[in-house]
Image 1 (cartoon, rainbow, N blue to C red):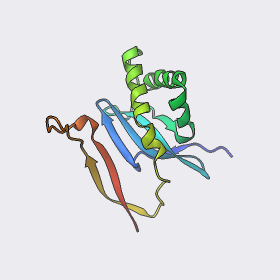
Image 2 (cartoon, one colour):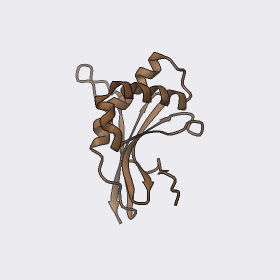
Image 3 (cartoon, rainbow, N blue to C red):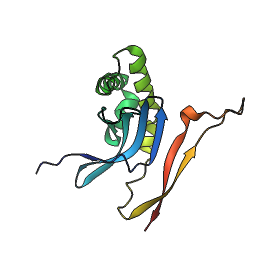
Length: 147
């Protein structure tokens, strides 16, 4: 039986926006029995136009230990995201992937279907030197409750 991978960006463990790109820590169902954490890159403002760029937990080790694989994936992703193919964009996407690998590796199993999102929390770091809020690195997470 053919099974099409299922990705639901309305259910996520974390989300972070970096200008025109948004990263999601969510889960992908590769088949009925294989649901695993993944990181998804999507355009922030052109949500309907972009294809989801997915980094699977099962492949995360390759992004740590193989810079060539990270570079090749970043180049492929900037093409899928409709970004200009240049070293700046490639480096940016590669850094975004690499910077969230620890968060991907520490994601919990997917929530059960009988959980309900009861709140959303945004954590905004503060620069200790100036006291300014660093909104570019704010993280948003769902707070769930079993029902």
